[in-house]
Image 1 (cartoon, rainbow, N blue to C red):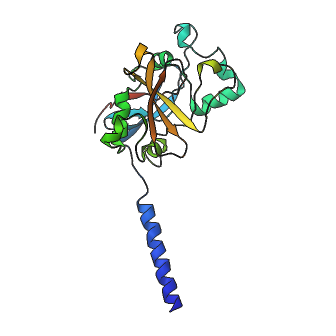
Image 2: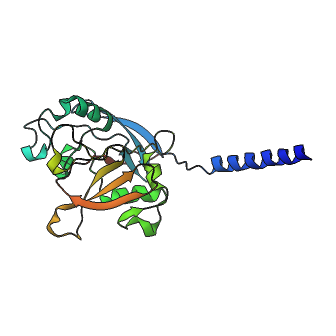
Image 3: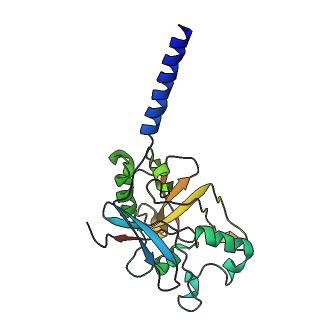
Length: 231
C-alpha cells in the first residue's frame, strides 16, 4: 500500500513539473538577420516583431571628433580607452544623451519612437490598458525583453546610465540592475520640450517602465527599422 501511495505521489509531482515546463514563457521572432555598420564595422543582429526589426545589441557607434558638433559628443575624448570603461563599452555599447542618440543612428535605421516601443510591447502581449500607462507596466514583458536567443532574442541589457554631473572616468549608475533606453518622442505633458520618453528594464522583474527624463542624461540605444521584407 505504501509503495502504491508513493508511486501516485511520484506521478503527481512529475505531472506538475511537466505542466510548469509547458507553461514557461516562450516566444520566437518572426524573422532574424544581421547588419554591419559601415561607419565602424560593428555587426549587429536583429529580430522582427510586428513588422519592425530591432537590433539585439546596444549601439556602439562613437562620433568622431569634428563629425558632429561638440555638444553631440557628450563624453570626454578617450573616455572608452580607460580600462574599466573599455570593458563596459565592449559589453554594453555606448551611452548617449538625446541629441547624440539622434545623430548616432546608422542610415536606414531610426531611434525608436514611443509608438515603436508600444508596438513591440503589444506584440509581446502587453494589455491595451497597460500600454500607454506611465511607470511600471505589463505582466511578463520585462522578462521577455531581456531574453536572449533561447527566447525572444531581443536581449535588452542592464547597462545602467550616466547622469550629467558624473561624466568623468569610471562612473556608471545601476549597471546590472537597470537598463535605460531612449525613445525619440518628446513628452508633451511636460513644459519646455526637454523631456523625452524612455524605457527601463529591471533585474529580475517582469515589468517595463515607461517614463520620461531630461535630454542631457546618457542612456543606451536600440535601433529599429521597418521590416526590410515580409515573408
